[in-house]
Length: 114
Image (cartoon, rainbow, N blue to C red; front, side, top):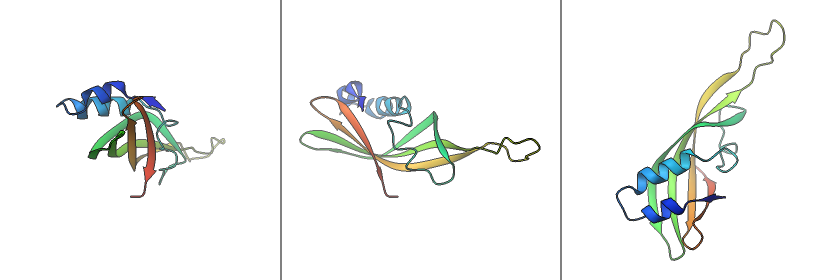
């Protein structure tokens, strides 16, 4: 998935949350389960991803972070001549568990039930 080496280095330091949020914001909708978390739109956009850290847990081989991800989705209009329906964007959110392997710094993300 993603290399979270900088996040792993920041673990246990005051800058951990800021480094984690920056790394999450840099991910795309193919890496995060944003499409699966849609509730209002048709497809997820990855141009404005924001994370709120809910909890962190250190395990023997990994660090797990439960986070609320906020992003936007789009519902396309028909684009037919005379059709008043236009593309619209909606604010979306989903609960995601990010697991960072301590050995490889590889991070995986999975959708959690709200």
